[in-house]
Length: 329
Length: 283
Image (cartoon, rainbow over all chains, first blue to last red; front, side):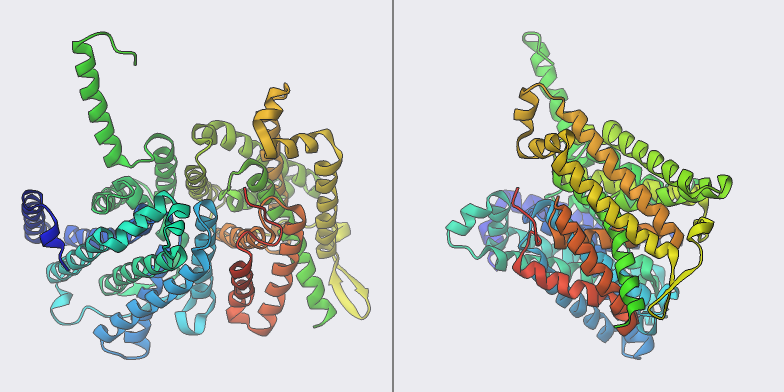
């Protein structure tokens, strides 16, 4: 890896400082918050990884997926099954969970990459719903509606603050991995495919293979998020793999801005904070989630972060215009 | 393979066709993937249930369900989708948001209980034929499915509206240039497609029952039908429905817990060879 050498030094150093400050702030955070808020923050970190994994595919390969919630949840199922039913050590189950998610996403990738746009969306939606249907019906293994319950927070992890720090370390490493992935030559090729598939094909790139690999990598990261969620939640049921999970993840990525990767962290924070705030007043979270989706699609498809940036830019422009002649609005 | 199960598969296929034909009509002709279609199905079923329970008339319930859901389609198209015209992904995600809202709304109004739409008395009971007892109502659903297919085929291929729809699909601008309000044609199609899902909800509500996650189940089957048949193809929807209906029924008999694999394995295999489905054409 020659990333450090290739980036221009000043920008690299500035970024390093920003990342270091953010990490320190996040690491100090749990000691300032009550226990409940610490667990909400843990949840935000886990879902930020899921949203980023969706953004890797949507923002860099131009494929919007609706099955990442299912891949995430499949990993959660395997971890809980492994450690409670099969009696494996927690760490082994986590590895198996991530492995299962990776294999599943390779399979889904092979099926889905030949399509693009709306067809890709539909196909991944159908694939995700199959996972949900299996988790619901295959009661002998998945526990059906009742799901699987376990006690995975072994040792120090039983402490909410320790769990938070462990998840923070995990998500920091994973985020760095995803950032490296999209910045790599392979990531550049993906962006080329996003912009023009036919051009990349005529340049001699094996487009389907690249997409399958991208899907697999993205599924791997969704799976790691799912494995962490198993430890965090100690419980899994069909609602973990249902469509609203994929939708929530996608919404986080969209709110943060597709193609910004770290925007997903902001998106995850905003959505989960909103969910917490809404649930204080009403049980109608799904209604709010749906309404958010509709409003964002109409008013801010580039995401709240991107939208705010565009508004600021436009205001600045208008101010410049007003200084000179009258601008046409 | 007994006759009883064959009939089960066929009647389920007929129900799927009623729902999926509306879906494929909207998808193929208007290029709108309406992920709220499953929710409209469920809502149609609930409306039909409420009307049938109050008035006792199944026919009236059918009219009410179709009218109510056609109106939902009108509101969805004119109130929301008009703001995102031409952006395929934004349209899909918007309808997904609408689906969540409609489901939650249905949960508020009708609660989480399971409902069965009351069946009219002349369709109650069973027919005995070839040594098989078979419920009359399921055969009625089969008949409705066949009638809907014939009706839609005639509409698309033998009427002026159908000709306009087909022309609009190929080149909406040219149709508009010849003085026709193409938006109105598309709106009518959208409402018709929605009404079909409402009708499907009523029929499904009578023999599959209605419950809060029924919308996802019917949506995934409809998606599979359209993915297999190819978008916008009536014949594709019919063949896709038969395929899914029969495989689902036999899958449930042979491998009850893995019925989903039995349906979607072949679907995946088909996609590997024909990504646009059996009758799909590139846009």
